[in-house]
Length: 336
Image (cartoon, rainbow, N blue to C red; front, side, top):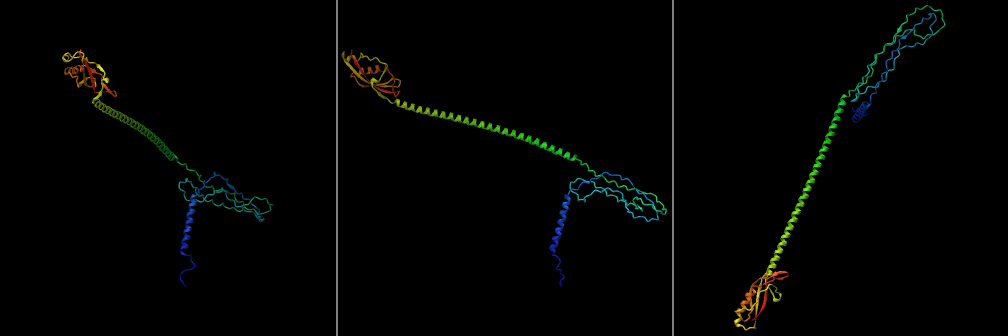
């Protein structure tokens, strides 16, 4: 037969059972730790009067009746139920545990200790009366009153004061920071407004400069155009324009008279006509005189050219612009 015990539980089951038991113990310990230990209520000590036992002598002949023997014990106060001491809970109030009570010594039994009963006296032998003994109840050991320790809250109060001071300082710092932020924001906004105003001013200045430059450019262009037009007009006005004698108006007419030196070759009553071509400037002055058709008398032709230069025309115009004009002027002389 093999040495292996087939009825023994497997090793895994054994380990599992051990782990379960250990886990239950741990959970029980945690539950006990979580249970709040009830405070002990200690009642005031009551002094019990001593118990007196009286011995009564009975006749010896008569058999003593059956008496109920009562064992008298000192009256004890019911001990307060003390819960099983639990493991210390972290940060729990310290509780002064009562000292263990001193065991009460048993009362000495005196025989016979009976209740007082009235029986019919019978002759009995005299029994020596024992002395009456007073059994004093042993004094109970005074139980220590459970005094709740006064918790020193000065540290907590100081800590609260420190926390409150820190909170106040933090609030003041936050308020100061908020004021600084608001001031910085206002300064930034003011700077932004100033920058925007400066930008607008610079743009307006640039616009004014551009407008002035444009106006100056346009004025220069207009002046150039006017100059070009004037030059063109001047060039056009410098080109002689032919006018008839009827279109010419004298500003100051010359004195045309038959010269004496030309009379030697002429008969009285004869008429001589000479046609002159005049170049009249823009001011109406006569710049040049040419004989377009001679009168046949050279002396008369020369005198006619000299006499006509003494006169002056009103300026000839074209499109209301003074121009140089060529005028063909016939002059008739009658011999006196």
